Length: 141
Length: 141
Length: 141
Length: 141
Image (cartoon, rainbow over all chains, first blue to last red; front, side, top):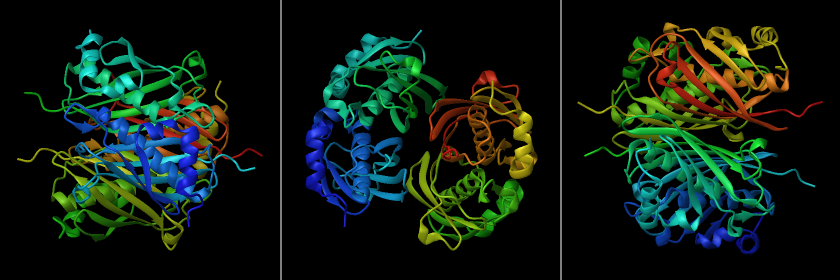
């Protein structure tokens, strides 16, 4: 069971993370230490060649990891990314992208995991990007 | 001497990279294999704690590296990021962020460099983030 | 079916990669784009705290990825690592370490994959390190 | 002024880090948050093509960063690497390699820096590898 619900995260984002709405990010599933997030294909995120831009993909990956971290530790808004390593593997076609994240290690101070990003309808071709990220978890009170 | 001008890049972005304008990114200086880019502080990029979000910083870094690559190889629109590794070092305060990028290696197929990001007026405290990135350069014609 | 056998790789290493023997690395399984490699626990690779050193773990990971690449493309000795990103997740106890690698993307010029490293007998505690790597594949003749 | 001397580090390594001697690593200079380390060219670290192997370069980089961290925080043997990202930029020729490391951020819990590696006598051609690394600093007593 995740330690936070989709509704709670949506409420947090509406209040405090406006770029999540701007980017068109929607949580589709949330597990304990895993999640699946969709990014709506938007024309303003395209780049030359008609492909989704790297910054849009990294935003999606960072958010999918944030949700996976919260799903494991609960509502800790101040968890922050300290490292994000993105590898871009194939050009996504224009359209929706979805991200699947999972925690690999959850420690007291650090959480580490990976995110695979896929073009809608082309998952069998393999991920368009693969991202690893480390989050710092603030000390509890 | 850079192999592309600020005006040429601005024209490319206006036509083909709308997110550069949306993010408020402005080239301040361009050298050969180096550049300095400013990101305007915008409320929608803040995150809990009043700090600039990681995705906004990564967008800035990716663009600063793209400009550095173009400054060295000229107008090659289809140069694409294949790896971007971002390390977030201190919480930026709300406000403008600037990025300084420089190429470390320019090969025929790959370009590699680093970007340091600073909070406006706090550069002496050290960078808020440090990013390395590899670009793939498409074969010439 | 892998495109190279364990015997062929062992012969290559005996001839051209002496550090593989020095480090005590042994291929246990080889698939197509995957492999499992064991590193014998050796006292000279320990570091303060009685744990296996980071460089030893990175050597193991790099080799496990090299074998996975060869298993997919065949005997291409000059495939070289261009990026290796290692995340150290828990202190390994002294003893054998094993690595499981898998390719995530195999292109014409680049191969990308991940490696998980485990302490012998403690795999269920999760990996001691997680590594991603990109190999450059030289043009064929 | 560095907070540890070369003699103190050499004594620590002789006692607790035997691989430093095996790899032929020698500190040439130590500053506060910086250092320069040389790796002796050894035949067993070569790989096909007559070039120094990636694992040998990563070992050198990890050690150069360890020394830079100790130069800034003093004798904290249990400082450990949590992330190391290595980019291999050109094939080193056989022979000595030297590494120059510098801390970019020194926090209470984490230290982050970069290392540039050069082939002896070919520094002006640019680095053969560029590495960033994060160290975790154990809480003081």
